[in-house]
Length: 145
Image (cartoon, rainbow, N blue to C red):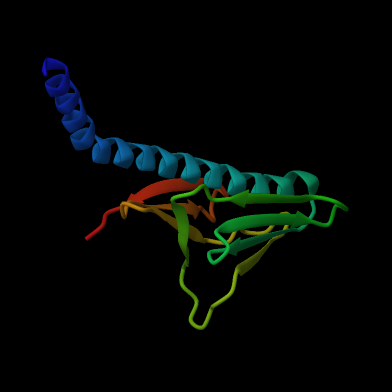
């Protein structure tokens, strides 16, 4: 009988703490995804500048992935968002845009001022912006209303 009480108490504690553990895991997954996204965008800008070759960046919210192509034969990179993290939007919004956003990064040119907004299942959002002045990405949290 005592063993049944102990097992019931452990089950209750596990059941109560599960949502907070799940939210914590989703938060870590979102942070990791935005760090990977920032690194991917930084690699695209760096490749265009260092190799002095144009680079095509494709951001596809429907497929939940980013792709990178250059004029070098066989070069292609892809970043797929992990489970539970989705690309919500590419900022700024362009009217009538339904498909993936395609950008060309040219050596010596200004980096486009874009942002990629990602979210998790709990509604947390983060935006990775490319700074047109420095070319470096930075991450900011978006407050939900």
